Image 1 (cartoon, rainbow, N blue to C red):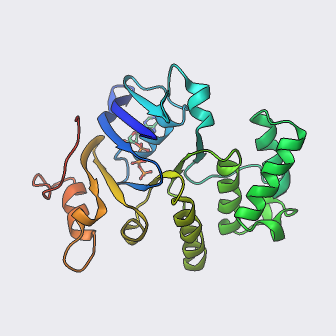
Image 2 (spheres, rainbow, N blue to C red):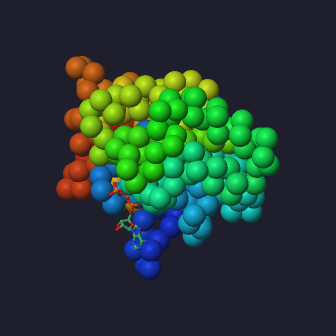
Length: 250
Ligand SMILES: Nc1ncnc2c1ncn2[C@@H]1O[C@H](COP(=O)(O)OP(=O)(O)OP(=O)(O)O)[C@@H](O)[C@H]1O
């Protein structure tokens, strides 16, 4: 398993943000992490990428423990944070150079990795433009570049298409689908249509707990839509979740 999450828990002060969350993801698949605002999706992702320490439980990225082997685990993944901003005074190429240097790559390696990622994400035309002057779509793509630069087997993407216009959304989704053929992608999204079209599996959270985990097909209604199942699972005043392959705690 490329991502293996076992009973991860985290509270902020005494308020739980993630409680006993368990799921796993195999190579070459796109997993959608769904749930209403505040359900705990970003908290799970931030623990997986090593920016938050779990209170309890364990998780492994390509076999490396996210706490005791944090550096090795981080080499296995690329992370696109929610609403990624900053580095506005750097050009796309300078931003990617900074990323490569902070990951410790030497000069010849650095050049090859940056050229590869510019090519892979079609960033050539904007490589000398400042991040602060780019449209949100190009900025997001540049941030995806920093996540992809070291060619990790796992990508963790927090609402990657949030705030993009419909064309930019469509273009980024195509790129992610392509990447998902060879990489394991865990992506959070509020856009159910996106989850329908892109994700092979869904992990659904509500109020800090995992409430369902299974193949996307299992959540679809007869019209091929996710809305009714996901609404039933995530609505906070509902106590009758839809029937799913719930793997919580397994
Ligand atoms: N730094 C923090 N300090 C205190 N509480 C926090 C912090 N970050 C998140 N929380 C709380 O933890 C809970 C889970 O938040 P989290 O951001 O993981 O949810 P989410 O599912 O990613 O939400 P969204 O879809 O809005 O991004 C929420 O109640 C949130 O208010």
